[in-house]
Length: 484
Image (cartoon, rainbow, N blue to C red; front, side, top):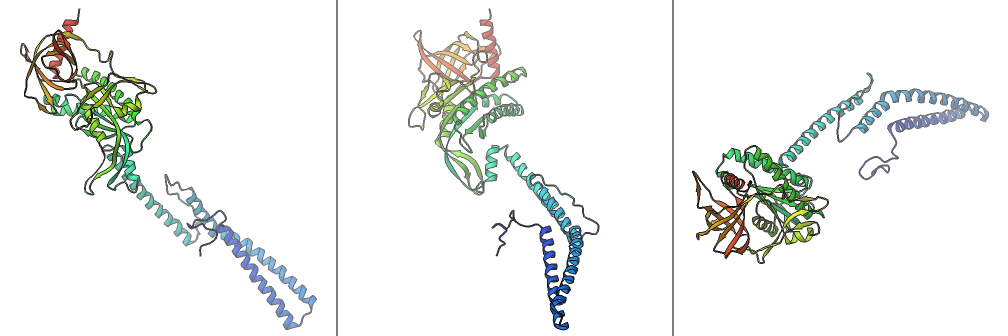
């Protein structure tokens, strides 16, 4: 039967007496009982053996009682001092040291004992120290291991995802849960072509520098980087736990990423490195989030149409642009400034994809795209013959379309061609023109708008990829023409 003074877990309650009270009370009552038995026995023996009268027996009993009190006081005083010195105080010292033990930062505390302390108590203190040292060592090793796992895998997964996996008893189980998230997909424009003309180690340094800058921004807005896909970044807002402002933070993060890239480009230009351009697509919807794969190989990620549509939205961007899908726009429309929506029918989708170009977001973020002074470019009327091919994914259409440029900017072109191309069509073009020893490489662009002009079809293109040497030559031409 458990003691009534203890709770079901066996821990002492507030009414549980200490060792001092137990020992002293136990000794006192045992002495009292022994002396009472001796008193009664002596009186009975005197009465039977000597036929003593009542008065004589009374005074005899009183003498014995006085003697018992003297003996009792002597025993209590001397025995109490002995018990306190040899047993009570050493055990109380051990208990006090245990109470002072800090679980969060445990340390072995030396307990001072008298030289003549009992062997068993010394063994208790020694064993306690040895156990604490072993436990502290194991705890530190375990803490170091956990921190190593968090720090190491936190570089491959979000720190919050690692915490969820490590702290949850079902963290390793295969499976997922359905929840609404906002997916942000960013990608550099023309990075693959840029890599062909530069040293691989230099391109890795440029890529890591770009990814580091973008990662800092994403972390500032509490986004979770699900994956680096080459120079693309898949970021999720709403995991591991959804928040009411996920879509708003995603939109603000996208604009902040574009501004951060503009700052990075200014530094890289000063160091003689190429300018990078990035497109960002955002979409919101339900996905399945969790551990995907098998017992042999598992990946924490998300699956759903939302991810694919976010990638499709991103593919329709030009450098420096942020496009959001309809579901995202409906949740942020009161906080953002958008330009004319774009509608495009994409393969595999049952209905047209509507995208909203976001140029600014209001309080509490107050961020605008790096337009104005950050993105203002010169434009000059330059006519160059060109050949153009339409792109479908990675496939180049066999039909060549001839035309000429009318206006050239640093990241835009206006061209005249006899064929009307749909907005957002990806194209590859080449200037059929060489300047002394310099011939232009392929330029990749996206159709932004089409309008009839002077009996021709004027197409405005956003450049997505251009070789740096070509860009520098065009900038020189523009400067020569536009400078008074």
